[in-house]
Image 1 (cartoon, helix red, strand yellow):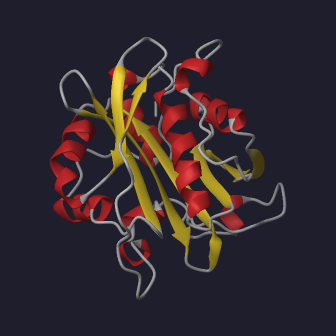
Image 2: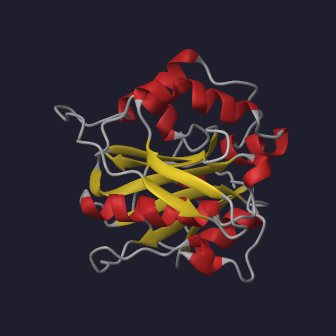
Length: 234
């Protein structure tokens, strides 16, 4: 599952995205000024969580750290051209050193990323992140990416569910996502997370998710989401 994102702003339903963001084609998580808000220091680590997916495969979901740049580069190299196109809304052959540093050197408060590592071989297989909106600290944009041979196992849902919990604990109440109009799998995942369609423009649609308070310690295990799942190129 792949999609690009934009700064989170509450807007009227149906408002064309093109009228709201001249930077909509540039994912904000690739813009250095969005890495973290001024004065913010990195937060302590969160406990790693082993997870069994729909097909019985096992992953470890944990926070991304600066030492994970090689894992991220390896995962990107295993994405198909189609998955890269859906993720970035344009073709992209590689991640630069500066992009890898930005994507891994994060503060876990204004910018959080959770990665999934295969239990079998230790390779990175998926990642979900949010970046807080500097103008609206209760909102954040999201991005989810799963390597092609791990799509359709419920990993995208698992990552986004756990990312939602992290966001709530950091004071974020709303997610937004800018998605390619033909990315049916990502649209399906977002709808399963009770997302609302809030904007359209040529080639893209925008969704918003309101993060509801959850009971302490509750999760939505991927194994419980296997029935009727879609193959999600995230």
